[in-house]
Image (cartoon, rainbow, N blue to C red; front, side, top):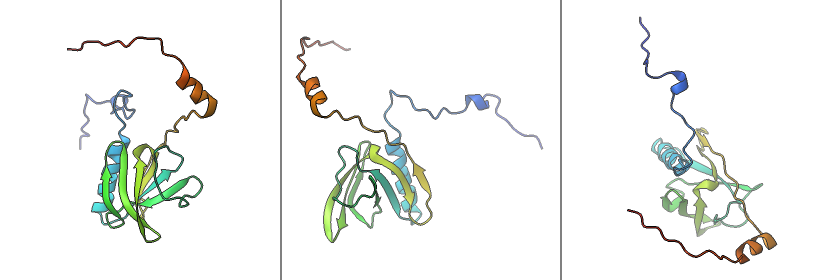
Length: 152
């Protein structure tokens, strides 16, 4: 039996998984696809979220050591929406429905509760300027005049 090999594709020319910095993040697309895959297999999708991420809105006191694991199954959520920036949904905590906002970049993992199948992601830490440094930066006078360019 002859081993067929594509002469046009060498190992060193395989698909480059390092994404172009000029493109949007692929992470939200993976999260949404994995959510569908896990749900379609009758399993429970869970996400792990870095609670220090700006823009995150979750009930207070549910995090452990800077992270929280949330059940994002269709049974546990209402009005689940995912786009390239946010995952939003309503969920019940202590019997009360609450609106949650989870920036996609704050998600460090999505996996099935029943078998652990899923994916882990890097969470890019946001650089937040606080105190005097942020005030000084905002108070710098801008002596530049606006510049418009015609693009055809």
